[in-house]
Image (cartoon, each protein chain N blue to C red):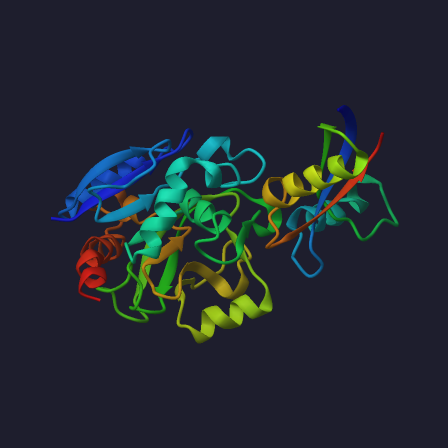
Length: 83
Length: 225
C-alpha cells in the first residue's frame, strides 16, 4: 500500500445558477478588476488516499467525490491523482 | 393522539420550538437523537431547522449519513408523514427523499424576515386542512433556501401536483417561486419557511398553525390509505 495525493474539484453543473459566481463577477469592476467574465465558484479538496495502485486510489476518491463531496443533483466532481 | 418524533442532529436548534408548536395543536412529541436507528412509537416525524452537523460541506450532506436518516427514509417508504423544515428540508433533499437541492440565496443574502407563501395543493401531509390559494405569513431564516432542480424534475413536480407552497414575492431565487414541495405520495414534505415560528399571536402570526394541524392530522390519512 502507498499513498496517493488526490485533487477533487467540485463545480456546479452547466445550467445551474451560480449565485456566488454571479455576485463576485458583478462586484469585480467596482473593485478594479476589469475585463473578467465567466466567474464560477466551486470547491477543491486535497486528499491522501492509501491504495495499492493509482487506479484504486482514483476509484476510491471518485466514490468519495460522488457520494459525499458533491451533490450530483447540482454538481459535477472530477478527480485527479497528483502523485 | 399523534406522537411526533422530532429529530435532533448535532447542530439542530429548532427542535424545542417545533415540539412546543406541535403540542399546542394536540400532538405529543419526543426528541429523537440522530444516532437512533428506529422510530418506534412515532406516528409522524419532523426534521427541524438548524445546522445539522454544522452544515459542514453542504447543508444536509453529513446528516444524510446519520443512522436516524435511514430510519426516516424507511418510515417515509411505509407512508409515514415526514416534514422537513428549513435545514430539515435540506437534509431531505440530500438524503434523496425529495428531489432537487437548496443552493445559496440569489444575491448571497442571509434572509431573516417574514414572507407570504401561497398554498398550491391540499394533497400533501402539510396542507390537508388548508385551502388552495390561501396566503400564509410565515418567517424564513436561511442562507441556502434557493430551490434548484432540473427541467425534468420541475415538470414532474408541476404535473404531479407536488409544489406545496410558492412565495408570492420570491425572496431567494428559487425555481418557479418554490417554497415547499412533497414526494409523489404526498407524505414527505419539505419547506423553507418555519411554521412553528407562526404558531402564536405573540410571535406575530398564527398562519403556521393550519400547516401544523394538517401535519398532526396526516397520520390518520396515511393509516386509512
